[in-house]
Image (cartoon, rainbow, N blue to C red; front, side, top):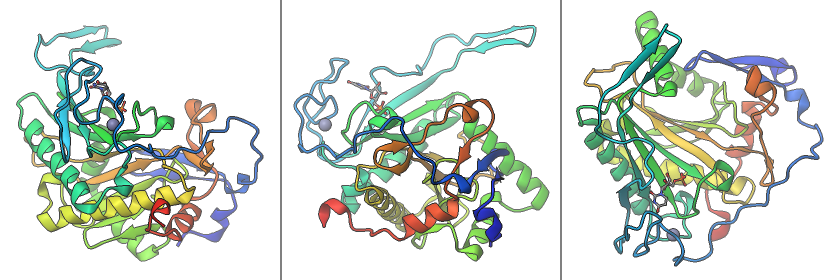
Length: 348
Ligand code: H2U
Ligand code: ZN
């Protein structure tokens, strides 16, 4: 258990996955707010929006027409940040100016044909279809010779910069392992080398014993507010079994992934009775042909909200220049998330 003193005093906590510290200032939770107030976000009200570029049968901004899809639908991003093919250029000037070409593929995944749904309000078989698409894409894109990492993610809500309320996520697959998974990979490798065990398996054992940061779980997955959480209601979704990627999950485990996603996102929506914004994404083994015994499949949920549907956390000032900082402790956030119903407030 964490010493009670730390629930009241400024302290810092270490994220062993990134080797970065977060400053925790629980004494500050009562500070007044006269800054920006957001409007509470409600889910879209129409099941079909004729002006939505992701709805079935509509024409996208790039001019291509979507098929009349009935479950999930995936397409190559019309404004892709990465492109396949082309020359390989490496530029290095005095080791200070370094640039190189980066090839890759970007896709958009429409989770559902229904414009008004979110993962939290989709039924389990539909979420399971999304899990299948993610798994297939990880394997298919990962099998390509010049793809070494497949990043699956979802930006949800205007606050996170999502361009459209239609339930969708993205997949960016590229030639190199990007910054965040790269740092996590080094930490996991180092831990395996030093402790002869998996970092996240060891962490899971500690969290199970402490039982103070667990939000919800099923046979395969556990959702917890990590000890080192930066965002107020940040969640780490961990597979209980040591698996390196989505493709290593068994059928029943994929059902459990759909189950935990629905339950966690429902809790999120219920927290402030809003369509809860977040960025989420999976971290898993690179697809570079190496065995990667160090990698433990997980997903991060980073929601921007702080105290209500209308007050967001800004990562500015000290956070940009020095270190991230939070007010409520991860244990307090857990208590709030744990007390919530798993029945969606809109279905009550
Ligand atoms: P976000 O809402 O997370 O930004 O994702 C939407 C993506 O959809 C975005 O990357 C793409 C944008 O490039 N897009 C298309 O590929 N076609 C369109 O017609 C509009 C948006
Ligand atoms: Zn739509």
